[in-house]
Each structure stands twice: as C-alpha cells, then as structure tokens.
Amino acid sequence: MVDTDVLIVGAGPVGLTAAAELRRQGAACRIIDRLPARLPYAKAVGVQPRTLEVWDRMGMVRAALEAAVPMRGQVIYTDGVELARMEMRLPPEVPYAFAALPQYETERIIEEHLARFGTGIERGVELLGFTQDEDGVVSRIVTAFGAREELRSRFLVGCDGAHSTVRKKLGLTFEGGAFPEEYMLADVEVDWSLPEGYGVRSLHHDADGRVDDVLVCVPLPGDRRYRMSMLVPPELSTKGESAARGETVHGLEGGRAPRLEHIQAVIDRLSPERATASAMRWSSVFRISHRLVDRYSVGRVFVAGDAAHIHPPTGAQGMNTGIQDACNLAWKLALALDGGAHPRLLDSYDAERRPVGEEVVGRTVRHATGGGVHASKDDRTTVMLREAQLLVAYPDSPLTAADGTNTGAPAHPGPGPGDRAPDCRGLTTGLAMTPLRLYDLLRDRGHVLVLYADSAGALTACRETAVAAGRLTGDKVPAFVVRAGDADPAKPGHVPGGANGRHLPVFRDEAGEFGRLYGARGATAFLIRPDGYLAARLARLAAPEAEPALSDALGRVFRL
Image 1: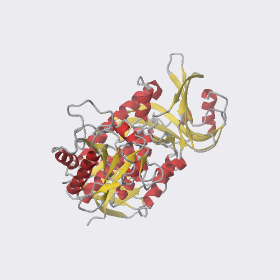
Image 2: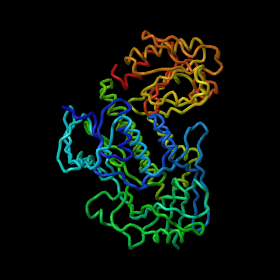
Image 3: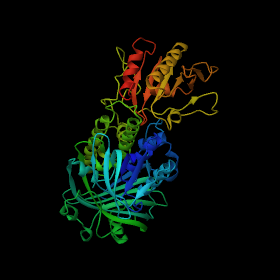
C-alpha cells in the first residue's frame, strides 16, 4: 500500500515549490518539516527574473509581485569612496525584473498557493531514515506527538537543507570547503538618504590592501528597511563549534545573536553617510561553505536545493537555483507517476541540474573571493542575464532534440533546443480585446506545442503537425498557432483540428515579436517544456521527415 506518490522532506522555498508543481501536474504528495512553524528570518532575499518566470508558469507570480520590491542596482564603495554604481537592467523583452523578498514571505506565498490544492505542511515531523526498493520508498518518521511511523511513497525528495538527512542517508559525498570568515545578519531600518531600490556594498582595506571590513545591504519591503550582513566581532564568534561537531558549516549559527549596537558600530565605520539603524526584527551569526553532491539521485530518492549544493550568497543564486531544481524534478516525477514518461526521463534530472549547480558554486566562489559580481570581465548585459539565471540552458540534455531548422542553412537568430523559451508581447485574437503575451498562453500548462505559420500552406502544415502530436501522445500535448503579423486579420482565430473535433487556436503576431525573438519563418514547431525550456525546434513541417523528427522529440520525454 502506498501512502502518497511523493514524500517531500523540508518545507522551505525548494520543498514548497516541488510540492506545488507536483500538485499542479496532478500528482499526490506530502510535505513534512521538523520545524513547528515558519522561521521569521529574511535569509534568502533575492528573487531572480527566471524564478518569477517559473512562478508565472505555475500560476502564482501575482502574489510575489504584490509582496516584493524592485532591486534596481547596487552602489559599491571602497574605503569611503563610491567606486561604481551597477544598474540591474535587462533587455526590454524580459518580462520581470530583479526583486527583493524576505524568505518567510516567499514561503508564505508558495504555501498559500499549495493550499489551493488541498495540501498543507505537516509540521514538527522529522525524517529518521528510509529504505527503498524497485517500487517505492519506506520512510521512518517521528511525528509532532513523538509517535514513530512508517510512510510508503513511490518517490522521496530531500529538500532539507545544508544538513540534509536525506543526503546523509543516501551516502552522497558533499565535497567542498568552508570560508574562514563569520558574518552577522540583521533586518533593520536605517535613516540614510541613499537611493531606493539599490543595494549597498561597502569595503575597507588594510595597509596591505586586504579587505578587513565589509557591509552589504539588500533592500527589503518597508520604509528604508534592509537585510544587512557584516563581519562578526570577536565577542560574537561561534567559529569552530559546528566543525567540532562534525557538521557542514553553512547558514545561521547558534550562540549569541548580534545586538543593535553591533550593527550600528559597522554602519558607523562603513556607511557612505551618517546613519542610524533601528527597529531590528532579528539578527544572527552565519557561516558560508561551498559544496556539491556527487549525484542528485539514487534510485527513487532525490535531493534538491541546499541538500545538493551550497555556496556563497553572492548574486542571490542559492534559493533561486534550488527552486528551479524543484520545478525541473517535479514535472518529471508527475509524468513518471502518470505512466506516460519515457523510462529514462528521471535520469535527466541529474544530467540537467548537476552541471547548473556546479557552475553556480564555482561562479559564486569566484565572485566572493574576487570582488563581487561587478568585477566580472563579461559585458554588462551578459552579466545581468547570467545573474538573472536567464542563460541557463540544457543543449546537451538527453531530452533535447537536435535542432531541426539549421540543416544546411545559416544559424537562426532565435533560441535553439535546450534554451529558455522567451516571452513575446502583442499576440492578438478576435476574442481578446487587448494583446496577449506568449506566457499568458503557456501559463498553468504542461508541454505545449507552439506552431508558427507565415502563409496558408504553412498553416496547413502546422495543423497536420498538431494532429500528429496528438496522435503520438494521446492528446497530452496541447497546441496552438502563432501566425505572422502580416497575415489577413480577417481570418478566423482557429483552424479545423484533428479527429477529436477540436479547433486549433490561432493567434496573430501583431507586434512581430514572436517572429523576431524566435527567428521563426515558414512552418516551424517549438515544443516548450513545463519549466519553460525548448525541448525541440522543428522546421519543414510538410516534408516527409517531419513526423519522424517530431516523434523523436516527443519520444525523448513521453512513452510513445
């Protein structure tokens, strides 16, 4: 007997995202956490544009936009002199900007979204251990009332942080190291006149040119409220305590919490103008490590987020990377549970996400030891796109089909297989009186086949491709057409569909953005995954080889 499809251990942003995506895709899950309540700490505060895109697809971005504040940039000071002002700007076609949101608010938003599916967190429940076989996992837990129970699930996902029980019980290695510095964190108001929406990074160097004092401030929702981090004074040091216990040294530490006067002393030394801190909500000492597991899964058990990778907080990459781990894994688990997945689909989780974790760990360590994000030698647009996590791609994934549009032709200007599927504005239909975004049409769906047509003949080829996709997958992949903007606007907003009698929706590329951003021409098919990446890009849809190419692309994911 199976108690649930998936047991998720850990109810932070990563575990909650995994649960929300599983429920959205129709899978059952339970989520447990050993803590009796949500922690009131603004630990992870940066929300990247790519994460907002993921939340858009999941149908929960509105609440985040209401609760967060924009991160417009960062002002860098060195030894009391303004060194640089970094503007966090992105190309105009990117739908979301950088945001700041306390972690407890992120957790609240996802938890409330998850509750719409009738799923809540089981608090005060701790995982003791587990065993697995070919059919499932038996987890041993202790409840909030002290009772010991066994719970059987088809899969187990460890989102239980840097000190993960799931990772330890799996016997995964967690190679890396720890930084010697200790830091203070505090959530305070400050009465300076620095520009709203900008972070502050202020450094002081000793006589030998080494950094000996640091103040980093990230804006939070509220009147001149910031999450500040700075070096720990000797009287608050907890150095060695966790290491002596044989623990991974990362995150908030026990011991004495900094008082407001500790925070004020650093502000007095490093603030670019005289300022007073007040209204401190919380404070802590924390340590930083950098580690990565040797693999992201063993059998039916997986790890995600800090359970799989930890690194410096430079650039706010950690929570966002974990959220995208969770989304990547959850849609694959849901499809496997449905019985419609390729037998090796779940192997792609490690193949896709471990290289991302490795790159993020390496980059954040370089930034932490080399002067921060602004010290990168890449051009500013590339730096911002990378920090926004908009350059993450899976071109070498086993799920990614070969590019079917470049054979014997110059490279197209749009995204290729494995790349992020960009948003587009200006899509029109006779029923909607205002233009739509492409992401409006993808929201709250799984795989979607987006077809482009710039002529009547191309439209016919698109219809035949949609019919073939429905036949191959048992109508599990919905499709619609984006028609070139110079098409006749009097044409209907649909064309006859297949044997199921449904029409194939048609949207007009009124602004020409789809054709430009996707480099689309003729009859072209774009298979877009639930997490917003292109699984395939196929052209020459009327050619004899079109259906085998479509079958190959779909067959990498689905059991055909």
